[in-house]
Length: 91
Image 1: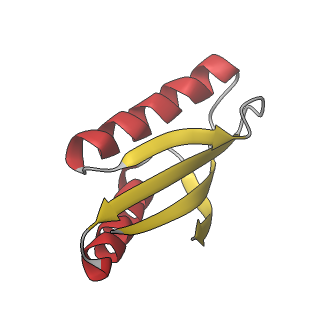
Image 2 (image 1 turned 90 degrees about the vertical axis):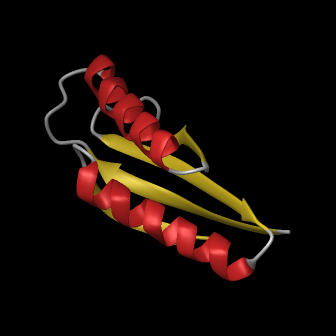
Image 3 (image 1 turned 120 degrees about the vertical axis):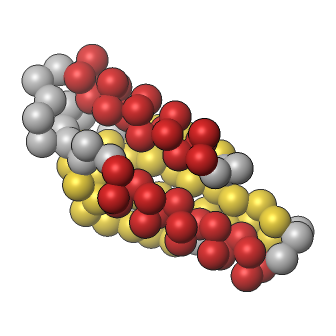
């Protein structure tokens, strides 16, 4: 069993409240969960209005499949999110 994970830091420019940020967060998480079989959650910067931190985890029987899936999820979020990905840490 292989587990690959990443932490994404995103900048959400057009938010005026935590409610706005959570709306963006929910949208990003739900879109990615619906498209991929991965665990995705908001894991940090919960009180910050314009910063969003997501944790992503992928489990597979093959290391290459898990790694490729994780990279595909990151690219998908970069393309579709209403936020700018400013950092990616892979574990």
